[in-house]
Image (tube, rainbow, N blue to C red):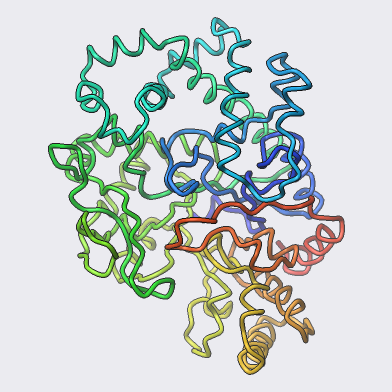
Length: 500
């Protein structure tokens, strides 16, 4: 599978983090400008987080539909150019706020998108074909029901909660123009704009790495439409939920609360739901990062009424059987396995058998242990190296939290790691050490090395994307401005030096 990945450097920057004056990054001009920046920096990969419509906690990992596109990412200027919005309406969305204010977006953006929809020709042949394809069917009906009844789907009237065919048909007909086609319109426009951007990015010789969360949210079109695929009781409530046991990130573990898959039912039809999901991801991305990959070998099941993830048990996932079916139906799919956290022999064996590259986090490399798997000298080529991920502190943020003695030890270990890679890069202070971490990552033997945009720009922890197990205040980071020519030159120099 590594043959599908070119040796190269990448930048991690989610669409929401792009700068503009409309409150959240979009698929508009700034996305194209960022692609141009990547090209000028000689970068071969642009990594993004899930593109899905955000749900609980504003997290893209808790979406109302795992196959949806985020309506907030729709470029409003393109809607204006198509005559669906006017100049005053566009101006009404302008804000000086740099970080994402999801509350304000929810209040204003959907109202504006409904105005655009009201001027849209629902008989447009391309739109009709999109609707008839069924791609957004479950999402459109589910969101129409949410608009009508609010709350979670298990509080819908029973005929809708249990998706009774005749009741759903009648509801869809009654809300066809007012709701159903509106939600279809959002997905149609998002997909059209995203694929246009992707084609442009690809034309520059840049591949997009996309993120596929392992689990789906409970209150989602996915669970509502196919409850038999999940571990639920007769009232469609989960009996067990997903999480991870206590680890480096959290003393009480992480209680995600996502419903677990009924793998026996999924196996019976050849994992059709999963294969279609990966097929959709393959259309949107060039390389797919499967989040929490270890959960496909064995997953941690926590009783539904638990307050923490301290009490749970490991259960068996589909392991290689799933990927054998994926290869049978879709051929070789470029996949990165997010294999961080507690790994046992089973998941290591699964990764080796699939051939998928795993992830290496250089921020974790300097505990003083010579066999630390995140040290560049211990990385294999079949891996993707990062300074850190969206769940970690920024490089500068981590270093600033160290006291003088800790930083002194860290510098010594980082210098030793650079020396073993044959790299001379003098550094003294924390800002220089943060850049040295980027150098160390790019100098590693990993086939792909990805630098979060925060680390390339030397940003502090107030620009961190997410703190695991903290429900509020995440996913808000945005660039105040586009990375500069200096940052492009910096990347070009490192790309050339380390033959990426």
